Image (cartoon, rainbow, N blue to C red; front, side, top):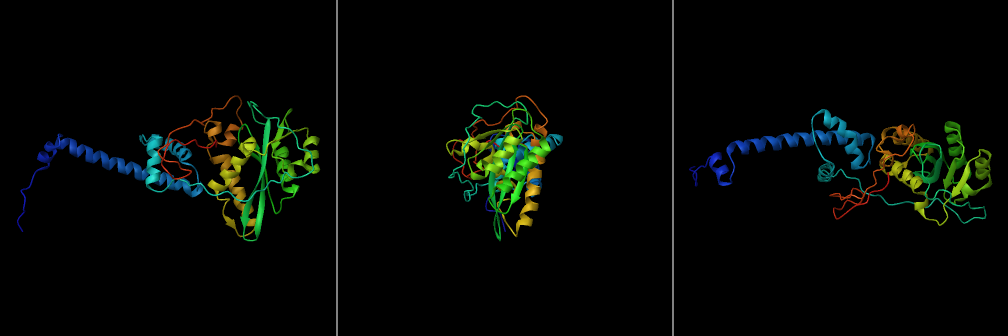
Length: 309
């Protein structure tokens, strides 16, 4: 069948748009190379997500950057966000669950000692909190003690109920593993687990100063609250487990990965175990940035102030 229109060479077509045939071939080759780079980047991301299922894009970018540099690949953060969005690899926020703090009790509530505190080394301030984990047989409760300087989890305990024993076990682990430096402060909410006689007496007996939130504001214990969220959102502790033992094994893995394999913006993108060996001010990456997409909400409107993680 005869062509209805005369054939036009690539050179003539390129000339119509103001560039040479060589430029057309170069651009085509460049696009092909870029696509190969993006396939490589996505493979790195998917491999990391096998272990860190809900790790944020900024930390993923931080972890793959050395590998990209080894392959002479330059790929900026904003471009990386767009790539993850196009392939549905950004993380969406999940709903919060039931409350674990009961501050309506008769025990003494201690004042907040950590307002405007400056931390220059580990072992000066521990923050504690409790969160729930679902099992098919009901809730179990994870108590955490975290070093506020390094963000390392120094004590934890998964317990079948909300009595003070779980929180005490986590504190005992922290004291046994870290010791108690002079002037150490323990900060928590005003929940009954932290105000009861057993817990307070252990703190006093260990010569640990007691500090508590005062106004019921979660931002007064923001570090501890955020650690809970990371373990759930990024390391699968928001799943429903078969029983306590399955939840316990998942918690062991989650705490290890958080401490040893997850870069943290509050400690200059080091792992908490690395930051735990440091001293002096640690650079924080909390700046308000305009990202093309909020990986927390999934929308692409405006400026996003990411959480301090």
